[in-house]
Amino acid sequence: MNELFKLADSEYKKFMAPLIPTVPKDTIIGIRIPVLRKYAKSFKGTDSFMSSLPHRYFEENNLHAFLIEQINDFDDCISALNVFLPYVDNWATCDSLRPKCFKKNLDKLLACIDIWLDSKHTYTVRFGIQALMLYFLDGNFDKKYLDKVAAIKSDEYYINMMIAWYFATALAKQYSETVKYLETPKLSPLVHNKTIQKACESFRVTNEQKQYLKTLKI
Image (cartoon, rainbow, N blue to C red; front, side, top):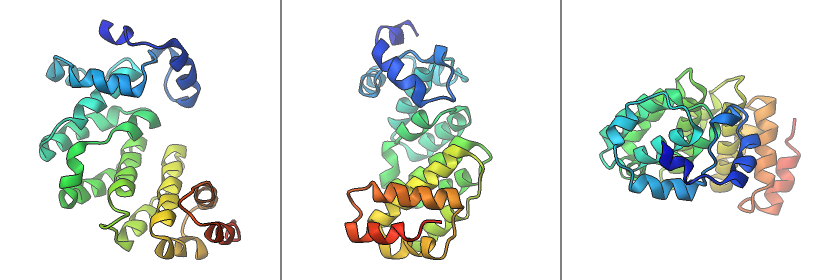
């Protein structure tokens, strides 16, 4: 992994370390995401690297994630994901993992999301919620997906923050259906109020909607 240290940016490490408190500071090299993604495209020894879990460094996990993104075959991608996800230990790696093959395999993806949402591992659940947010809030939207996320009850901060992010995004894209989950509260008080906060910070929610949402705080 000497090549990774050649890509290090000390100022970026200082910036990132406080943002990912679940990651030991001495395991952060400090490589900007675009730089690491570019490196992943020319990386050699993919098979041996991806079979060497767990990785020591934060950037090694990110590199692993970016190598998975490049897998074009959906089934192979899911197989690699299911091996890797239990080792993800922070929100940044989880949230930056965006496999390119998902968009063309949405029907098959839904079955995988159900499994991820039922996981006992924080970042596997977070990844599943993120997938619903990214791929099923537009033309593929169905109210039942809101129900799936609302049904998740957790004490994990990083799960709850993703639930709030999901519902805030849903308010921006599917307001009339989503606001019902706040009018008749179906979320925990923490997630409920954080959803409203995030929605009110969004430029995609109208001022009128924001004023109404503020009256729903609990």
